[in-house]
Every structure is written in structure tokens, then in C-alpha cells.
Image 1: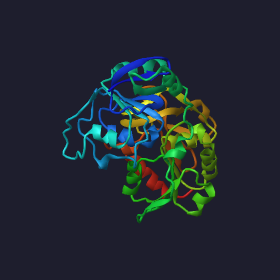
Image 2 (image 1 turned 180 degrees about the vertical axis):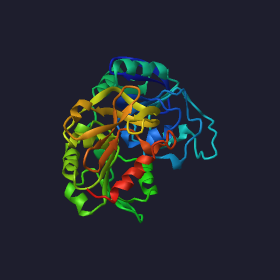
Image 3 (image 1 turned 90 degrees about the vertical axis):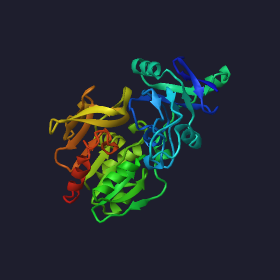
Image 4 (image 1 turned 120 degrees about the horizontal axis):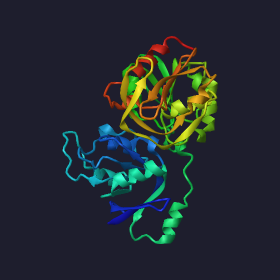
Length: 354
């Protein structure tokens, strides 16, 4: 079926559709050569139409092992060539079947290089995927759809659950957590209690955890003021480690500020320098917002990690409290083991208290 991707600035890109279901969302691009299934099931992509820049997608199929959540939260998927004959001993199905089963609108056969160049020059913007013969009034109606704001509420866990272990107790605030983050914390020995995003500070502290983890998640961190207020109450009470959205929320809770990047950082190949060791690590990233470094002045935070490509803040540590956070995803194994030391650092803090 002939289809098209239309951006809000009027740009049109043609391709083939898997189904006639329309899609509306912020159009972004991911530069990873692999990891398409992890992208599809990463809750941080909630509300977005994701363009994969690598030309061939689906070449190793899909398997439940790689899912990062129980469902896909992306609003649409834009790819160049859709591989119909994957080759991988772990594959359980092809990407076409996976997208159909998960109800993900997909347009393929698209000039994804052109889409990426447009977003890099103009910035991320709303877009829609629909059949080529869609009426003009329907297109206008879709483009006029208000942007999604309450995306954290969509992706957070509805119920408290545990991953018991013999190690220190960690309260995990779930803003859209990836399974591999939980697995990484569990792997170093943490006893995990995963909590909904709207859990109050009093409820968190009532668990008497040894530490608190702030997860990744979608959207603008300023859209969840209640979470910022909760984190502010937790600061100084327990050791805290944050990743991605958790990093941004922690900065806001400490009185710093954030801003929207022109086209964001999304991919498995972003170099980040650890300013403590001087080493440069390859990282996996997925964010459209960043911490304003100047806003950290007087907040007792030291920048510990910096993006090599654009010098944005990728990590920070409090001067006196056991609090640290990173913008990127150490659990995603892009290095593959460059950044697992961060989970061990958190574990080391848990026995020291606040």
C-alpha cells in the first residue's frame, strides 16, 4: 500500500505501508545499526515516530528476549529497507510480523537519509504517517492533533512489584523503565521494589530502602512537576542514582534547569567522556532534553560526564550527598561493557547511607 510521511512544515516522504492505520507523533531519528526491537519497546519513545537511519532494518529478526517492555509505545516506525528474510539463531519472527502483532504503524522504502537531514536542519517536529490517498481534511486534522504531554503516566507501572535479592533494598521510581536497567541493578545484587511514578516521598521512605533509583522515561521533564517535587523531598534522605529522565528530573529538583535539544541524541554510538578518568566511552542514548550546565552553578553539583559531539552534560555528582546521575543508558551495552561500572558505584553507595 502506498503511503507517505508528512512533517508539519509540509515536507512529504513516500514509501510503502504495512497497514492503513495512521500515526501521529514527534518525528525523531535513531542512528543505531542494531537495536530496532529495543527501540520499539523502549518506553522513552512514547509519543514519537522513530526514523532508523541505518538502511536495512530487520536483518536479525525479533525475539522476546530483547523486549524492553511488555508492549511497544512508539507511535510509528520509518525505515529504508525492510528485511523479509532475517538470519539469527535466536529469531522467533520477522520484523514485519512483529510490527503487525504489536500494532505499530510502519512506512518503509523511505529515503531515511532525507528525513534525517530535514530533522537535523529544522529540528524535531510533529509528523503523520498515512495512506497516500488520504483526504486533505484528514491530513489537516491529524497535523492539528495536540502534542502528548502525560506520557509518563502512560508508561509507568500500574502496580508495585518486586525483584527480590539478598542485597541492599532499592526503591525504583518507574517513569518508563527499561527491563535491562532493572536486570542490571538486580545483577549487581540489589533487592528491587518498583513503584509507580506518582508514588509520594512518604510512601517511598516508608519502605526504608537503602537507596533510590530514578528511571528513564519519555517526554519533557517539566511536564511531571509532581515527580520533581517528590524527588526534592527525597534528596538528602537516601543515596540516589538517576538515568536519562531521572537525571533531568533530579537536576530540576535541585533547582537547575533543562532545555530541549534541536534534534536530540538517539542511537547506540554516542561518545561520552568520563571527566573523572579521562576515558571516552561509547554510549547508547535516547533523549530530547538536556541539563543547562550554567544552571548548575551554586547547586553543589560537579559535571562528571560530557558528550564529545556537542559538549552537553551527560553526568553529574553532588559534592557532599551520595547522589549521581547520567543522561545516557549504561545498561544498553553499546561498548558493550564500558558503563556497567555505574551500577557498581551505586551499589557501593548503598551501604553508606545519606
